Image 1 (cartoon, rainbow, N blue to C red):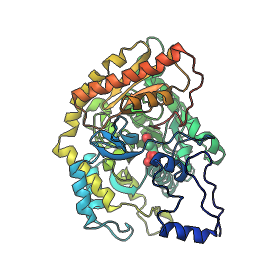
Image 2: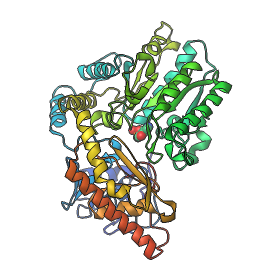
Image 3: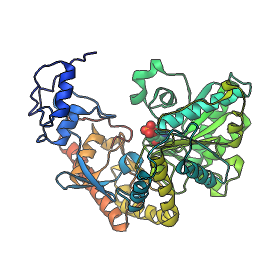
Image 4: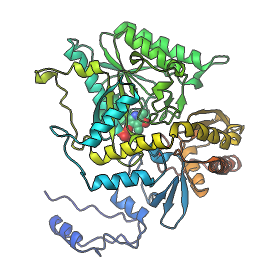
Length: 508
Ligand SMILES: *Cc1c(COP(=O)(O)O)cnc(C)c1O
């Protein structure tokens, strides 16, 4: 089929259109002739990217868009552009990077894996990295969870957990349990199934007619505390609301999905860990699965390897204290390669053991369990052990707190909060300016920091490598950016900022 040749945007320099030819000829010509005028190497990469790439989470505005930042290389916590300018990657490249860019041990492990086995399908075949990774992750839960089911992105892991939960109940003779419960402002990814349990309007509204209905219950977000109320009592209120729903509809409900400790996309909304004990108890009482989405908060981000380990006051967890499903992605590969997985309880796996094909979980993705991605994850777990990362992070979290102390005390901000390697604060409503997130993003870039607030929430989620001096530097640069943005808003009403990207989510 001949596709129409898309017109080059008229607003960009050097966008001469190639002579009209049949589509097949055009394509051949462009592959053979690298000096093809449609691949002008003298045009900056950001401009070419606007023409060639449909960027994620980025509105397409009429007129010449602001080009994306073209990164040439990475080095530890730094991203370096083509002109050699350095930016501190203060949001860990959308929350995925753990130990900085170009970590020598992960690089070496990947190079060795590359020369051994780059990929093989995981149906009917297996390989050492997939097996070892599943064994080691299960061991990290004390054997409570296991049978890693692999996929590539976080959203796919969520889809898998939802499907497995429904299918489990069906295999148990309870096909009526087919509804899901999620939290207000929760985020679980943007494929059609994951979006159905996501409560972030900007991502879901357009697709609402396509989505299955889910129950949305009160979030335990401690920022909702009324005067004199503690984070704990907010969590208890949220649990009471959940219990009311479960009382009414447990026979129809398959699972509850939660982001333990921090609802990141909601604006780093943090809650009391007692909420985790509460949902575990309620899910047991009403026979509903509990899915812990640790895609963002896993891998040491909140202080423990799994956020869930902070349930029960941080005491060692017995088998029955773990969630029924646990989803991991983002940091599990150290931020190198797309990898996600779902761990589940042995009893769940057992319910799929049958001669009957209809009872089998026949889900798959082509790159499931990719050896390179699994090898990056194994190298990541090695770094955790060898470099005592969790112990080191207790110190780094302290440094982060100290680096951010002046910002936390700034009267224009409030609700400063931190859990492990996540720090956040909100702009007070009386100091809010239009387009804060986009403006702050630009102001911070000028200060050498890559960060992007979520609405009026300013946050830092740096890789686990910043020392005390770098943390202080980060805090000072963010403070300078805040002065630049709020000063600007106070002195002259600049009107709506020319925001280019969504000011939501991890759009850094
Ligand atoms: C990022 C994220 C996802 C989705 O992961 P993708 O790899 O972007 O599909 C799901 N849940 C949570 C909590 C996340 O932060």
